[in-house]
Length: 185
Image (cartoon, rainbow, N blue to C red; front, side, top):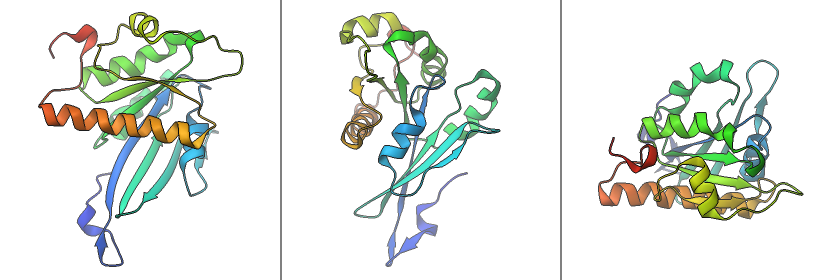
């Protein structure tokens, strides 16, 4: 679905829609992150299609739509439709199973879509240095890696702010989102 801000009005002000994708492996915390941020009851469709949806309305008419991309491979056919028109993505990661991130990272790198990697804090999860995670994921140095607790609204908000800042920086510099190993796209 393509949103046209000129079609949506509230109090004679145009709403500005922004689409952000939340992705990562199965059980990583996508629904939890969306639930921590959204002001509406998140739409959770776990029975047939594991996709989550939420909305945040910010002053000035900015509306952020959060789409949790389904992680299981059998639902990857939906990724192209979901990512159409997105500002960027948050790739949630668990340091104990980083390999679950590779499909999403590869997907966004191939499409030059801005993304950040958010290391989700789970009880008992060992802390890893950012440079260790970057090396393990073979990420370009321009891709932000942030600590995130998907249960905490402030932590999730900070993750989205980092994504938006990253996407704006790419536009401001005329750069494209990093490709694998920093090679040109």
